[in-house]
Image 1 (cartoon, rainbow, N blue to C red):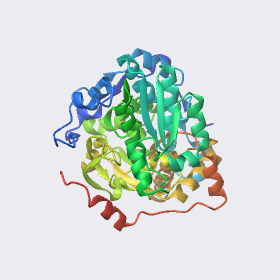
Image 2 (cartoon, rainbow, N blue to C red):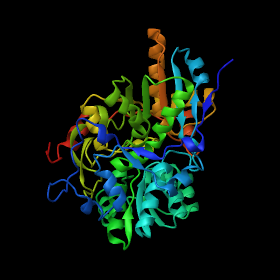
Image 3 (cartoon, one colour):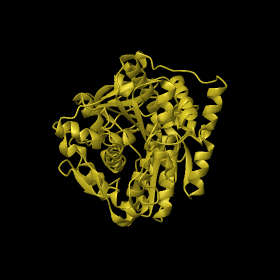
Image 4 (tube, rainbow, N blue to C red):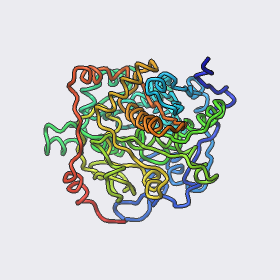
Length: 454
């Protein structure tokens, strides 16, 4: 008989602190810099755009553990801990000796991991006396999470949603509006940045870089308003480490420890959220866990991008971030994994790749949907297109274990469900989806314009 398949924590076992991996890194990430002065950004400069608490967390390189506010923990309790699940069905279908586990973040009220940081950032804004916040969203998962969190703390929210996803995923838009947010398709005529892009390219369907530019511009022009970000920056990944900290305890309950940790990669929040608590044991205790970030072949910044200072947005409003990037003017293919269509990686992950602590793996769109279909049929959960990339990388690893006759323990993050992405599945099942591999010459052209600062 199979042993228990799902592992939960008691309320008292839910983490009370987030983990800040930068404090334990031998080589700290290079600092973000002010694009005007070319000097490291300060907390005071950051508070012109972000709330102070998140600004301080962003630049904190000394404290490994940061307390989760009680008000945020109370809201976490409505859905945490999320289950750790042994994927027996998938193992059997693959005929692999590998043991496969997944952390199921799709059970949150909004169906993804994004709520972990949305609640924290909304809380800090409310505590600071902020009344309005702005953000961007790709596939709509972050926008949905922040819409819920904004309502929980009585904040007004404007969401700039990448236009291609605005049209591809109308129900995500409806979720945000149901929670009370204003949703604008980006690029829009609402901002200077949006108007310029539409004037230059009337049919442009948007990117996360574009949507960030519009959200930042609106925040800077609106009284008592702050910008809130869903990935990439250090403080966002910090809040997501509640995932990995729970998973540590749950893997111990299962009597195993992961040889491989896998998550999809857009800006890095769900990858770092699961990986960093385990990676600290590689850094401090000599563990040899392998960490894999699964990205789309159409947006391969980890494997084919260049390490350089670049803007986090298209218009150049944000601080400059040391990152592996395809260039902030990168125009992504219209794949359905909208949350992974971002041009750059966060500074922590970029440094960890340079140090050989992790690596990226490119996944073609069709392979991701084939993996999603197998997972749905064996485990009963339809994954988000983003999460399907992590499943595809897991299947690759499990097949390698079968071929080598090795029994490894693999842990991946199911960062969200795909029940609002069924138009993408319709197109996949109809044979209407294709693969897209980014040409080398496009990458070369995009990065050629970057200012060489490293």
